[in-house]
Length: 122
Length: 107
Image 1 (cartoon, one colour):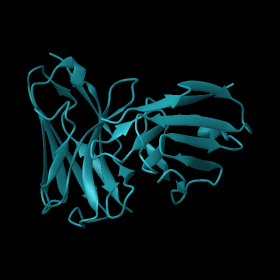
Image 2 (cartoon, one colour):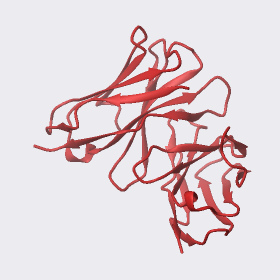
Image 3 (cartoon, one colour):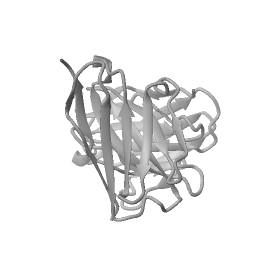
Image 4 (cartoon, one colour):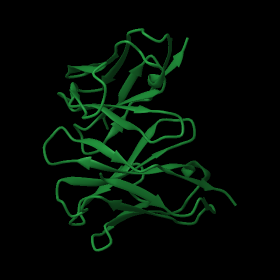
């Protein structure tokens, strides 16, 4: 059974950089059939796709966040990570990591982490 | 980006009811449409992929249909555990987008 688990600070100050890691267990991140994705959900709101990374390091980001986002992968640890800089209160959200099946289209998110609440506040 | 519009934004229903949720895309997305259920405090859970394919382990009372720009999620014989928020999501574009959600509440 594949499991994803987010980790990182729950409180970050404005203007600082958020760093979150997603640890994948029960399957290899190097499988080649998946996009490893970050999605966030503002309190009481809908879902916003942030971006993904492929096992070989290829990335694609939401244009609205692209200037502030970096997603990286560490295949040796079976982890991928999110960095979001220049934080404001508008970045307060629950952050999810998820696996997108990409072997055959249409693609879909079949496994999600439990989510981690990040609050941006001084 | 492709805009996804769900309706209604909320509805009230009773156990045993048949419920239909609609999702409309701002452009044709073929069958690149997925549905998720999210219970309070939990991560979303995949119900339907490719517009009408039932994800493994999901009860058969959930079904999806549609193609192009208009899609529906139907829950027949609504059960207590089905009271949740439902989201559609398009995977036609590399930039994935979600609908605003439909909250199904107990009448």
